[in-house]
Image 1 (cartoon, rainbow, N blue to C red):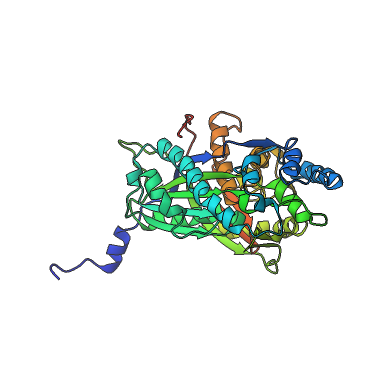
Image 2 (image 1 turned 90 degrees about the vertical axis):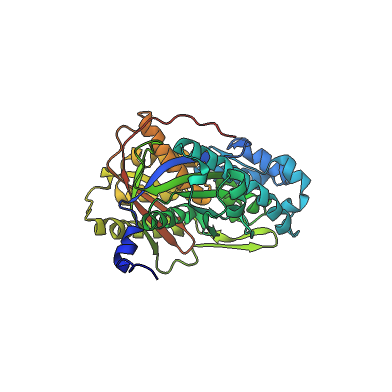
Length: 404
């Protein structure tokens, strides 16, 4: 070698960022088709040729009323289901056709959300250095990450990480990974994408199968994209930071491995979600998860109302339990309830939609001045809890970016 290399420690430090990972832009997208809660029972039972099950349809209406979902966006229209009758036949192998649908639909919806985030960010797509993509909708290789390179015009040497089948904590987990990438690679700009198309979960109603009714009444389709980077550029082009990601933790709740179970079968997703057990498990453990995240930062919160909140709304019952345990004021979880009401549970994308809702509401004056510190928390199979400590960088106007 030529001249003597620098000290290894100095070399390592020189490659790391100076400041924490920061959310620089957010984009969200949904499919075009929107179905309201009042419309959905007729759509669902008509599309699945189950209109003769009048008693079950009445039960489904009652279940839907309790889930807190007023409307959802869905890729699977009545026309799509009619073109693929095996999807509505619970005994017919349909995994292949479902996988064919999401192979195209997930990248397209991901690209739509990503273009909005990149447009808001203001820098060219070729400045993206890392790509983190997560989905529960299928598992293809090459995957969504690979397809986004051409769809978005990313560099061919962008460093990709693909996360499959992480359930509802996927979006927060992807943000945790982006934090590590941004802080350990000086100048890195990480595009985080979380997209869900729930045709993989769709099934016809069956007598005695309560889980199917919950699934069809709760879940919706959507994609969210976030650009993360440390040390925001303050000259041309100017980057405008939104939130600093100060800490990110993951915790498994003891003796909870059967609370949420997901697996692929010949007819799409199988598994269960314990609607009674999950709120109790989360309520019993949420304060410990928060302490494990914030106390290493020297933050000991005596009143959780002093923070802003982005809580994954796995169901309205989970939000009610978090409210009760932490003694939160009604407005604290209003963004989570609003996203659940207007979009349904979009698996991992949901908390990223809530983060967007928080900043947009703040900029419009709907939530007033957000507290300096905030929490993102999401729950999924395991039972796994992802908790992120956020620090608000300040409000700024958000223009409506309409990108096809």
